[in-house]
Figure 1 (cartoon, rainbow, N blue to C red):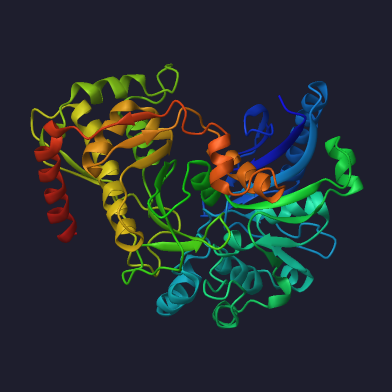
Figure 2 (figure 1 turned 135 degrees about the vertical axis):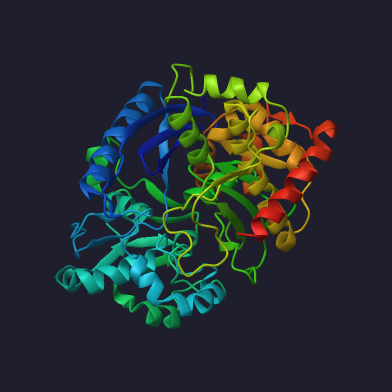
Length: 497
């Protein structure tokens, strides 16, 4: 192992992770702490900021001790995190309110009030008005918590807060800011018209830098807590989905990646902002400076399959991933699920408010007969999710050009039959990477280029060995006709919704 290492911090929705990468991009060690938010019955999803601070320095301490034991000098810390959360802080960075998480829906009323402005917001920011994004959360705090607003010096996202804890500075990067509804994609700056629509004062927003830039240096106080030398540069890498896309190999216009988790995201790359007239496509600033990502999301992917397992199979079954029994019955059902069609239209938190481009409501099964088995229904769920992803691929291609293959990662893609389904529905190879550090790897690529270890992101990606051991699933010609009929039936059912 080389003597220079970079620590990547990856703060997700339910955990925070630190990964030590060596000079070649090999993940040498990792530390993680579970850190789930609190889900309240009235739509609130919150997190105490202190839990982020405690977990951050505990995992950094563990990683720094491992690095020291192996003789590795840490040359930088790079940070990525989930997007569109909001934390109001005072001038010293003290939290004034729990973090309002991205899934929180308390702002649905404000979204309805702003529905008439959604297209204008989309045209300027690349995002429609929904409760997912940051601006309506800020507007809610101003309206409902005026005493908090009066004391607020800055509105931070999770990544911004971690950057502050490490550097003492209020800095955000443009890939994160492009998930707020407040950034102009054309200028790359906070947009006065958008600030006016949401009633947000510029004074509460962070200073902007490009993704991959240094946000500051590790303060003596943070260095002592992390057991690292002070002055280490801290890089703000980008939003977690943008970094995951970079770590999966989204490097050129011909690339496309699909990441599955609670929902699914199909992401392409563009050298200019793109807009879909029906507002089905989101456009954000990429983790690659000067580039943009076009993102088409399906609100229900992994959540739909998990729901079916929990309701019809009694929950996790003791297998390695908890899906052994349901997966076995899926494989026993033929392609096309014996005529059953599933539309995974579960209402996603934040979906469907002032945004006609996202389906939201109730899922449905069609074509059930007396011979339909539980496995047929389970397969129909996966085929419905994969068909949504294939539709989203078509949308991304419409605006970013044709793609030869789809690189995939995330929960559902660990089931080989799902990858076969997806390849056949997309009509092109599906490429599955063997490891799951894509988000942290994307953050490492960002920092490695900034540190001058590699001339560009493509060189860093290649040097890291990403792509070695990929598993490729080719479209199955025997499924072509049955899946063509499935997509026709879905189109017919969708048009009658």
